[in-house]
Amino acid sequence: RRQRPRPAPAALPRAPRAVARAMPLTVEELSAAPYGQAHLFEGATPEAAAALVAQLNEIDGRLAGGGLKGYLERARGLMRDAQQSKNPFAGLTPIVPQGQRLCGDSGPGTETYAEFERLGMAQLHKCAFCLVAGGLGERLGYPGIKIGIPAEVTTGGTFFEIYARFILAFQAYGRKSSGDSSLVLPLAIMTSGDTHDKTVELLEANNYFGLDRGQVTLMKQGLVPALADVDARIAAKDGKVELKPHGHGDVHALLHQNGLPKKWADEGREWLLLFQDTNPLPFRSLCAILGVSAKNDFVMNSVAVPRLPKEAIGGICTLQGGEGDPLTINVEYNQLEPLLKMTPTGGDVADDTGFSPFPGNINVLVFKLSGMARCLETTGGVIPEFVNPKWADDAKTKFKSPTRLENMMQEFPRLCKVGDKVGFSQLDRDMCFTCVKNNLADAVKKNPPDCALSAEADIYACNARLLQLAGQDVEIEAPGDVEFLGIRAKVGARIVLQPSFGISLEEMKERVKGKVRISNKSVLVLDGAVAIDGLDLDGALEVRGSGALQDKVVRNVGAGLGG
Image (cartoon, rainbow, N blue to C red; front, side, top):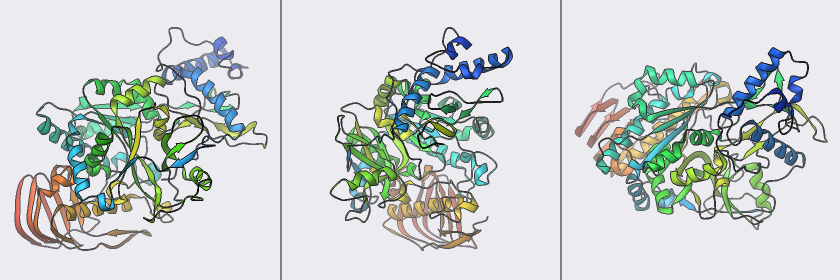
C-alpha cells in the first residue's frame, strides 16, 4: 500500500508515559521557554486565554513521551533536520533481512509450512490481538465505520465479525490445547475521535459478536497540535488550537499507556498480533506466522508479500553501515531505490524469482510481548516521528499550511536493542493481503482496485485455494470475470470457510477427504467441525454444526452475487 515518504526521525527521549501534572500549566509557563507559545495569548480576552490554557493542559496530559513539552522539543529538532534535507538513511546499505518465505517450495501444502503451522498452533493460547480501527467508511461510500462494512455478501458478515470469529476459534483451540477452560484471548481496539462512539455502538448492538466484554479494551487515539512554523509555534483558529492526526504509530503509545503489553506478558502471554481494519486474510495464516516468530525468537515479525521491483510499497531491509548497529526495518519505495543504486545491483531489481529480494510491507505485525513492553518503556510509548512540511519558500523558513509530527507503526524496530531479533514472514498475496481503501470512482482507475468488490473476490479466492490444499482430490472451477460499475474482479465459487471449520490448513486437512468438485457458480458455506468426504456441488450449500457429508451431490440454482 502507498505510504507517505518519511523524512528523518527525531531523536527518541527517555521519557515516562504521559501523566497528569500536579499543577496545570499557566499562561506564563506556556508563553516562556521551553514551550514558547506566547503568540497564542496576544490580544486574547481572559476568557479566550483560559479556554486555550484548558485545551493545552488536556493535550499535555495525554501526549506520550513528555507531554506537550516533549512534543514541541521533538518537533523543533525535526524541523531543523527538514530544513537541512537530512536523509535518515545516508551512508547505510540495504541487505536482505533474516526471515522466512512461506511461499513456493516452503508455502502452504508443503511440509515446511506444516511444521511452522504446528509450531504456531502450540502458541495460540499465549496470544493477544490489537486492531487498528480508526477509519470511517464514508469516504468509501459506506455510511459507517470500516470494520462494519460487510466483508462478503454470501453471509453478510462484517470485517469485525470475521475477526471476532477467528479470535473465538483460536480461543477454543487454546482452551483445548492448554487444558484451561477459562482461557480468554484479549483484544485491544484503537479507535479515533471519528470512530470511537460508532465502534461502541457496533459492539453493543451485536453483543460484542460473541466476545466477552471484559476481553475487549477500547483505546481512543487523540489528535496532536498543528504547528505554524519551524519554531513549533502552535497554530490556532477561532480561539482553539488546531489539531491533526498523529498517525497509526500511536497504537504503540496507547498500548503502553494502558499498560497492556506488560500486563499481558505478566499473565504469561507471549505474542501480540497487530492487524488492519479491512484485511482478514492473515488470520488463516497466523499459525504459520507464529511458528516463524517462535522458532526465530523475533521481537517483531512483519507479515510481508512478494514485491515487484519499484512497486509503490515499502520493502523490509536490514540497513548496515554507519555508526549504529544493523537495523531491520521497512524502507519506503522512494527511499529504497536511491540506496540500492549505490550497491552492486545498481538499483531495485528482481532476483531469480522475478520479485525484489526485499519483501513488501503490509503492516500486519507480530510482536513478542516481553520485548515489546521493554522497548516501549524506554520511550513512554513514543515511536520515532517525522515531519513533512509543505514549504512556502526556497529557504525553508515558512509553511504553506500548518504541519504536525507524524508516526507509523512499522517504525518500532528503532526502539529495539542489540540482541532483539526483527524479521519477516513472506506469504503469497492471496494468503495474507487484501484491503478496502478506494471508493467506486477511484477504484475504477486503480490496479488492483482495493475496494469492496476486489476484497470480497480475494476472500473467496483465498478460501478456494485453502480448500484445494486441504484435500487430496479437490477441483474448483476457475473463476470468471465480474464487472460492477466499471470495476472488474475474478469471482468464481463463493466459498466461505468460517474460522470454526479450521483455524489452520493443518486442521482443515483433517476435515476434507474424498473427491470434491465445485463449479464456479456455486456457493459453499462451512461453519463448524464439519467433515467432507466426497462432494459434487453445482449450486448452493450451507453446512453448520458438526458431523460429516458423505459423497454428497448438490444440484440447484444457487444464489447470485447480489443475493
